Length: 262
Image 1 (tube, one colour):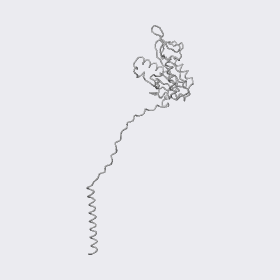
Image 2 (tube, one colour):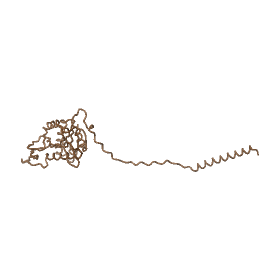
Image 3 (cartoon, rainbow, N blue to C red):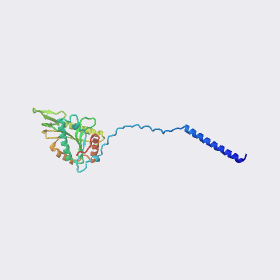
Image 4 (tube, rainbow, N blue to C red):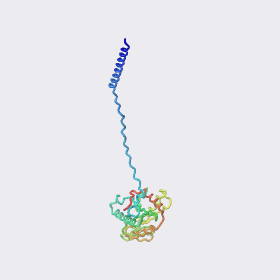
């Protein structure tokens, strides 16, 4: 047999083999079809976290702007406005008295002073009516809006009854002011302030009430005398500015609503 014919037969057989091989692979691929799905991502678990309270504003944020040059006024407790007995006549009279005193403080003091209203210290249910912090020192003011006739002797307060007798007032305003000054002094010590923590005290009578001052012990400031008393404070220098800021910062920690009045 001619060699050319043999080579031709071999090539044909080789071609047939290749075609059969390709056909077999197509059949396998069509019969076995595996679908690979992408792995599903796990559903994320939602975690609800309570937001942290907003930080207390810095003093630069509390400083009043515009033409206002008075003190920074910070409010604390609001029981006189939204407490259980806020709708009573006593609460209303108390609010009006404290607002009169506050307005006089705003009109008289300058931007070097802080005025804290209704300060509630840790571990105490009662409040300090007004705390002043400024160059003239730290003062606790016990504000009273009284009607009737009163006498103060040896620091003890007496009220005249309907039959003309003088009845001793248990834990009167003078004793309250002393107690509140001690509490504030202790609080400042616990806050790490070790110098200049002496707290002065005064009772402020927020309306024209006859009071016979024999020996008051604690200072008693009548409403009509308040501008003069504050003028004296403004001339005194007991705290340096940095100490004013330090004491005010400690009190600011207990402020429920640190806002500038006006």
